[in-house]
Length: 288
Image (cartoon, rainbow, N blue to C red; front, side, top):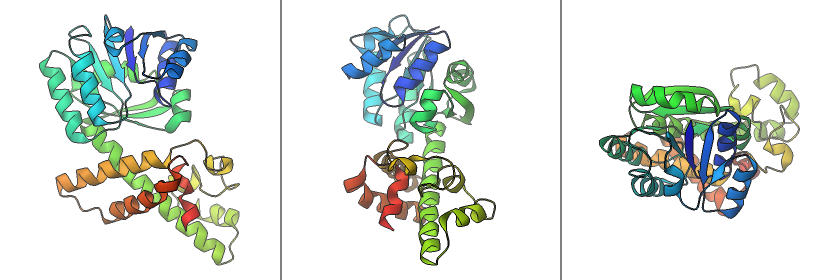
């Protein structure tokens, strides 16, 4: 299958490489020369523009920074350039309203489209073990599923267009809340004289257990290896967590949902991101 891939950053580069490994012909584009060079090394054909990459493609995958860019690229560089009938897969994390608007526009122009944001981070993108939360029609999902399976361990249909984005921001809001709570618990345990490893051994098999505790512990040297063991480098950047929390709060306001803990998590990450945006989001333990 000929697949155009637009956006070869930290996540997109690994995802495109996995499509090549799966035997697809990947036609790649990014504004970064370094990203283009890396894509070539992984076996992608590269192009001078998104529009050129889309020519003759059976599918178009995009992994872009925000909703405005997604809308601009899909409406200006993909629609009318990719053959009518191609399936479009936007794996960016953007606001629900824009995802639905772009999907409706694409459908009216003769394209199937899904919003398919990811969970898993850079390591999972490189390893092909991402989780995809997919919004779109049943037909569009079935067409996209075989492509997404080349890049992930789980592909889940969340319902109508935009529901993939809804699932992503709800999930990451919960993750932020859990991480802050996990950090608070470890800090308090330490002040009460409890060894961090001992607290981990107890809480990881008790009612306080959560993913932030057992799989992504914010304390160096405790539990599986995490960014905490690498001075909080790599992983999921604080700036990206803050982006997702802001999207979640926009969606909460628009839908009338009550999210007091989500709102407080956003406030804490906004303050932390001022000087620490590049650090993994678990580094917020430093502030407690």
